Length: 242
Image (cartoon, rainbow, N blue to C red):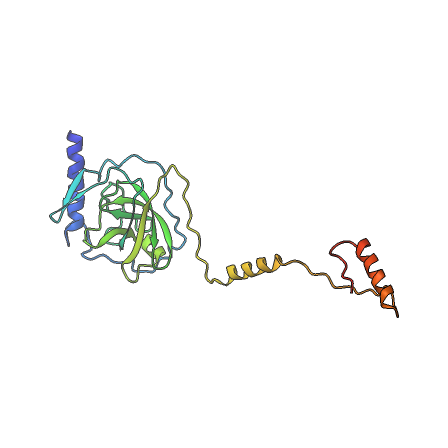
């Protein structure tokens, strides 16, 4: 019971600090991107693996800014669309709600109700870009936002400049292989071309016609007799007699 109380106290301290502007926990008053541009295009996705729920950050419910949030018992089948934001230097190096240290250069995220940790695929619905993150923190505590992404994740999804973006969040089962998204085709000309080629290839091949004169007659009766004889002996459908 003492451990449970300690865990709840830790979560309360972390969430209260996150939600209080200008609190003493952070050296910065306002969040920002790094002073120098950092290339995070090669930062690897989070690698989903089976993990127990973290000791901290998973109460049945908690209150931030007067609103109560109820955490989900599991993440199986979770898929939701909403607004994503991101957080950076102000929180870099500080402890997350799960107790892990926040690294803005890794693929992580914060969510209000999913179990900690949860691995999830986040897809930018505007450009189709997708990343896999480890959700190990609580937030964002704004009415219209679904998920807070690390600086690296937001950069790879292309939402740094605007600050927010419309995304789909889909929880990943670590025991199942990760399905990679199928890349979008840039133009529709290639499938049409393939269909046209396939249609052309099904047309029957035509052979050149061969004309052969088998006789010259002054008497029409003699010509008709030869015609009837050839009609009997010639293969059916392969000889046209006139």
